[in-house]
Structure formats: C-alpha cells, structure tokens
Length: 112
Image (cartoon, rainbow, N blue to C red; front, side):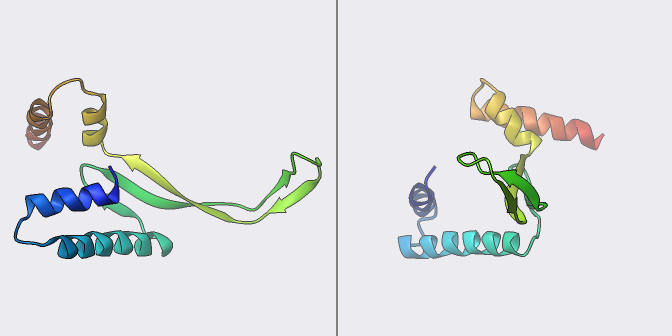
C-alpha cells in the first residue's frame, strides 16, 4: 500500500475529515515514528509488530574491485519484527473475517 492509497482510504472511511486533514494526520504519524527511531527508541504497534534501531559495530571490510582493506564505521539499520497476529494473517488462506474470529479465540484462550 502506498502512502497516497492510505490517505485516500482513510478520507473515504472518515467522511467528517477532508482530504488535507487526513493527509496532515498521516504525515504527523509518520514524522513521529521517524523521530522516535532517529532517537533510538523502540516502536511497538500491537497486532503489527515492533521496529527498533540496530547498530552495527565498526569493522574492517574489503573493496571488491581492488581487494584493499577499508575501515567501515558504525552503521544503523531499522529492524522489524512482525507480531504473531500479522504473521497469522499473512500465512493464512482464509477470509479476513475468519482470521479475526481465530485471533479473538486465541486471545480468549490466553485470558483463561
């Protein structure tokens, strides 16, 4: 899904908000998430997954063209781990309504 598709879908679903308002809200959410990651904070959205920043240590690498050794500094990457619910949805061959029922049953069994 593209950002523009998300904005259009939300504008259709929430008719009391106009398109520029929805666009601004989506932009604010994405900026907030990016700011949190840039400050090495962990982001968790239940049912979707978690994002966190992984820092790779400096290391000695090799230039593939020349074969000379090159020092590579610290690098940061974003790691994502999907939630069990999302993993179940992706790997299931059933309808979304049936998946929702199965997930609710899973949570009901955990509460007992």
